[in-house]
Length: 285
Image (cartoon, rainbow, N blue to C red):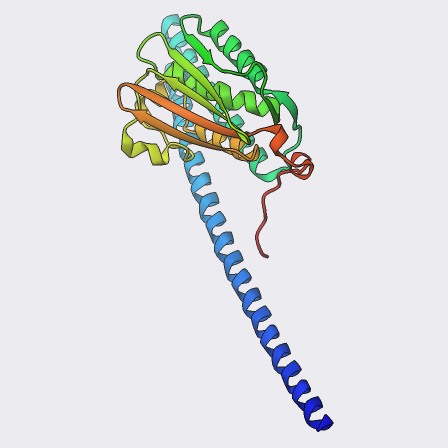
């Protein structure tokens, strides 16, 4: 009888071991397949990114090349034409410089550990960004609505200011006349919502789902005239994500647009989350 129970135990243990090995093998295969899919998705994104960047750079390069060829073929040109050519070439160079800076910033946000976070006052950050914008665009009006005099969040202030500045500058850029912007802060137990609403041109509903895509522009002619390459909002989204937050957009065409950033409060984050480097998972190799 003892031998029978020992044999039965051995068989059960062996069966259980085989079952666990089978589950582990399936789990490894699934992770490997997920890793391959993730790797292919990143390759596709990278390929599209390079193609779009090349397209955006090609335009100013073509303009500069054309003007240089004109100057070569017309060695004696009037001073007025020379000044016009220089102005347009300089504008194209500035466009390329802005595009390259944006591309480098996106690469830093995606591939590097996200340091420089500290406990800061969101109200103070918004006041600083608003003041700087008004000093540049003196015709603009910004009204801030808040119930708290201080809201503590865990943030990289330089990046957060950049995200807010991009949103406010967009509101000015796409306004019908003198920009009127309202900023509302809504605080809950765990997070703070920053609502930035303008009374500008608005965004068609069909464009809203793609607004944070890289190189996506609603009005390409308008964006090119203002020097935009469609990277500003994708940078804003990445900054917000690095702050463990999220961003959304609502709009009524030809009437208003509202961006809503939601960021966790410093008191809601654990110490581990505060001091983490925010490195995203690299997938299975």
